Length: 125
Image 1: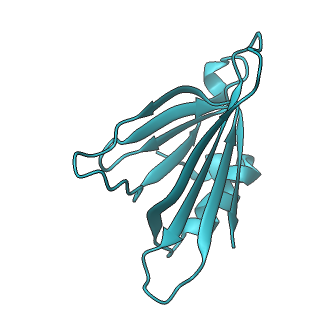
Image 2 (image 1 turned 180 degrees about the vertical axis):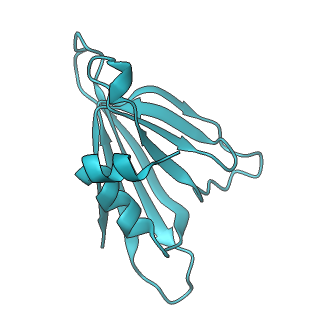
């Protein structure tokens, strides 16, 4: 659960949740995992780009999320093979003091996606 303190102390979180406020971006257009050629000593070799389109019929905007330093990625598509990320929660985990890990990301409705990451960006286009 995201607290007001989390939002005050983390501009990335505040920006992400401000973009989501009142918006319905959950149709997955693209989910792309990229890995570097070598294995880093910290294991942060992956980035994940998630592009979500609006659920509103006449809204052509997309929400683009880029996560860097992705670890422990788990993707479990639903049996019907339509992936929807209706509640993609990003939570700070810096207090756990895991080196190179700042956020926990999880789709909480159907538990289809979960991972840890170092940082992320969010943008509406």
